[in-house]
Length: 257
Length: 293
Ligand SMILES: Nc1ncnc2c1ncn2[C@@H]1O[C@H](COP(=O)(O)OP(=O)(O)OP(=O)(O)O)[C@@H](O)[C@H]1O
Ligand SMILES: [Mg+2]
Image 1 (cartoon, rainbow over the protein chains, first blue to last red):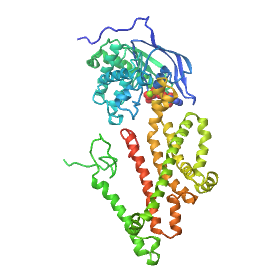
Image 2 (cartoon, helix red, strand yellow):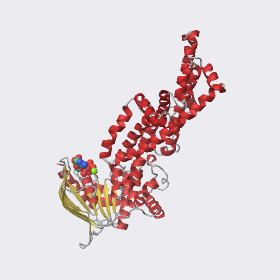
Image 3 (cartoon, rainbow over the protein chains, first blue to last red):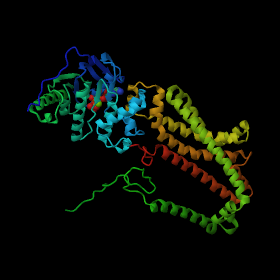
Image 4 (spheres, each protein chain N blue to C red):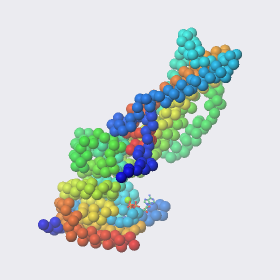
């Protein structure tokens, strides 16, 4: 059984989802969070980013989303809907799960019935059925993160930014949500920029892994992951998978030293 | 194998008696009715006991009028219509002043806090004045207010507002400003207006703090109504003026009756705020532990 399938890279003519050109970031207090980085995430591409803590990964996403302005260089993000899953769940404690998931549609002035339908679908996708009317305080950490993911899904984004969304979850839940996320990706083919600390997660999800050096971060390796989608859970135990994970791990160790 | 119970094992925050268990929570440690009712009753009994001790043992009979025993106070003040009637009339007046003062404090305090949260310049220019109003001794202000606005109902309400507004301003402002960066980013990414942000994010997030302020202000407003009345010494009498009147006539049972009504009014205000708070934010905020999660 060959789990390794031919790579499904986008043709070169594809529009860029996200493109960074010599982008660096220096905070007003003098902290240099990011050395100039240049990379592209085409739409239909899933790019994972790994790197030591504090190397500027979150900063990278904040720059891509426009929450922070770059100090140098230029950033292009495909016009259209942007999805952003933060490092914390950032649920509003006074809203039930359903109302939290409906929030973005509500803020964008989407009609109520439509918002409700989108929320129900997203809640089902992340497996939170039955918890719609619970307040966040009644959820476990993993369930909060799933609600946060569901909230981002309602916007049907074309560019999707993930900041270590599953970092706090146990292995099994994490793998389940990875599978779920890939199913969505196979279905919708957004451009994804996914931060993680887990090499296995990075390789399992992505078409490409970017490895960053310690602060101030820059990209020290750009490793292709030549598996097609959909990906079966068993891919994680495939020798080819292990080889690429080994490569990423080695680059990461080098970046740390 | 012996099972060892580690010190510190088990719930880290044992629910004491009287800690309300929110509906929907697992009823692991629902405080028993006994636990809720008995300790406060014991304390009340002790207080009444000390009262008797003073009236009958410590005070000589010739000086017993300084603190008449409970049954005398209750009988004279509350069971004799001639005495009860003026007390109730004053209570109504004082309650009205305190309630109106609190309502104005809420509206005005909230508006001021919102304005301050919207611009640092407003915060910097208004805050010192809020502090001044809070710290100037109310006793110094009362006569001035009397001169300027007359010894009427409006002036009594004004005293309530002056004394009750500060906790509402500070707590509301603190709540509006304490929203974390994450939720703010979430709203920023949707390109919301500042009013949407205020109404859908900052205001609900501030509610627990608003109620903290309200709980303090409700009591202060009652105090303001009584103190203002006490020092005006003119106009239609509220509970404050009556204290003076009874004192001058050495009608101490009525005076203590007045004090009891005053504190009942304060307790009522406090409980009302608690009940409203529980209704509004009880589903998602655990005020006993001061957190949402
Ligand atoms: N607003 C800020 N002002 C000053 N320095 C900042 C600011 N935000 C982040 N930094 C600094 O920039 C660096 C990169 O931060 P960033 O949050 O991007 O790291 P990260 O790679 O996401 O780390 P982690 O993996 O721990 O989440 C850190 O050293 C941090 O201290
Ligand atoms: Mg980070």
